[in-house]
Image: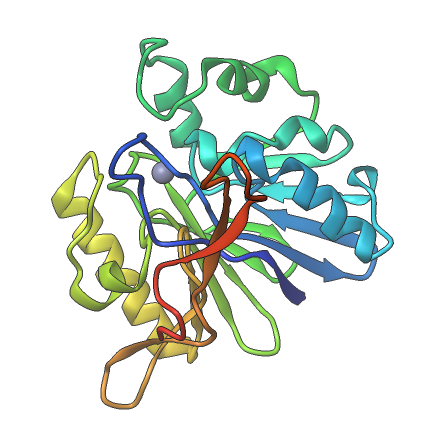
Length: 249
Ligand SMILES: [Zn+2]
């Protein structure tokens, strides 16, 4: 599989306005297969279309979408890819279909699409080979049926979804926003072991790819950066405001 980051996740939540949901979205390509890992929040839609168009791809060219879990910021744009097989954990869908409609971060409309509304949904369990070169690994905690995906590429990649949201969680094992703290910690340990065994890079749900060096320290493989275009004054066009960590690794 050839793997390309379309949008890097950003390790932040709004301290004033609720969720931010800037998650990692990647494209995997092998032969005729074009696979998206996650689809991102609604604000990603125009950006995804543009990034695909830059590669002479349209949404209809996407053959498969791998979803790690049922939270809105990972699966919102699924309907953009009606010709694809949508892959999600069997246990995750079982959990999500029984939730009260007001459950935070879970969209009942999207769950209904996954649960009979879309003609081509693949339900995945721990250890399943989902596609050639792609294996699912159960990583419960953040949600009960959460999956990570291990992908054979030039260097093995582990798409951790929100079982590891960012560099802090992989480094410390301390996980925020989990439904089961002990299960989450076990999932982080499992993924760190897999990274070591495979020499793999881990792609968190909300950060740039991470690797562990020979001393066991976690580091980013590329710069973490984002900016907002902000209207600051009545007579000024929006100015670009970097957020986070200029040059932070
Ligand atoms: Zn989540």
